[in-house]
Length: 369
Image (cartoon, rainbow, N blue to C red; front, side, top):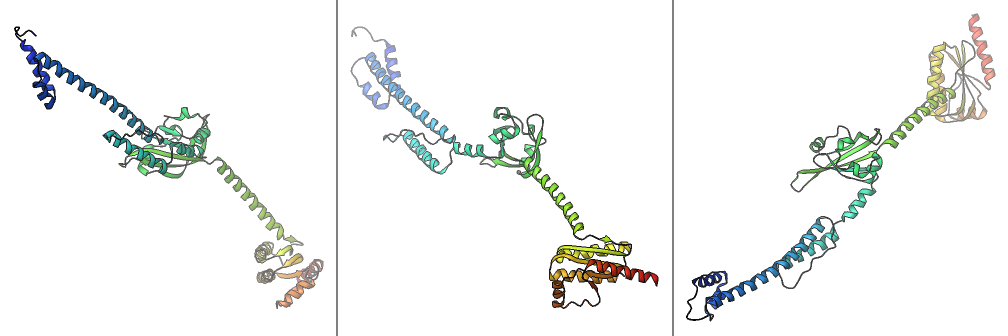
C-alpha cells in the first residue's frame, strides 16, 4: 500500500475483531506480524478458516460415531446382539463408550435369550397367549390364540380384550394382581363361544408401575366332553351294578309263605352283607314263614362268606321266620365242620327240591294246628 495514502481506520477495527476470535497464542503471534492491518486481518481469517475446517471434520467424525452408537443401542433393546462398533487407539470419549457397548453386547449374547427364541417359545405354546396394555388393548397374540378364535393376527391386534372375554376388566385384574384357572367364556368366530380355563399375570416396570397383563387360556371343550362322558359312563356302571346286585341275590317266592334265595358264583364278605340286607327286607315285607337259602350254585366260599350266611340265618330267625340251607355239597359240609360251625339248629338239605318239600309240609302242618 502506498505509504502516502492514509490507512482506512476500518481495517484496524476489522483486525481487532479478528484478534478477539483467535486463541491467545495466535493473537500474540499475529500482533507482532509484519504488515499493515489488512495483512494481519487476512492472516487472522486464514487461521479462523483452518480452525473451522478442522472443527467441521471433527463434527463429521463425531456424527458418524454417534450414529453407530445409537444404532447399536437400538439393536440391544431389540434383543439383537450381533453388531459391534469400531474402537480406535485414540482413546476418545467415543472409543470408551463404544468399548462399553461392545462388552455389554457380549455379556447379553451369552446370558440372555434372544427375541427370536422368546417368540419361538410363545408361538409353540398350545394354550392361547395374549398380552394387553394398560388400556386393555391387545398388543401380542400367539398362533394358538388365532387358531382358537378363528381370526388372523392383524384382526386381533389393538382390539379390546373384552371383545374376546366378555366382562373382563384390566383394572380388576391389576387390582387382584392376576387370576389363576378361572373358568370363562371366550368368543370365537361366527358368534359362538367356548369355555376356557383363564389365567392372567400383571407385568410391572422397574418402578413397580403396571405396564401390561399377560393372559393365558386353555380350551376346555375336550375336557368338558370327557367329563360328561365319564359322568354318563359312571351312571351306566352304577345302573349295571344295581342290576347285577339284584340279579346276584334274587328272591323267588314259592308260595305266600315260602321264599327262596338262590346264590350263584362266589360269596365273599361284601356279598354276604348284601344278601343279609336283601333277605331280611324280603322276609319282613312278605311276612315269610320259611326262607330257603340255596347254595347249590356257589363255586367258591370264603370263611367270611360262610360267616355271613350264618349271620343271615340268625337274623331271619330273629324276625320270626324259619331258615333252611339247601345244596350243601360234601366239600362245603367239611369246611363248615372244620371251622367249628354248629348247624344243629339249622335245617339242611342236599337239594333245593327237598328243602321246598319240607318247607311246604311245615307250613301246612302249622296251618292245620
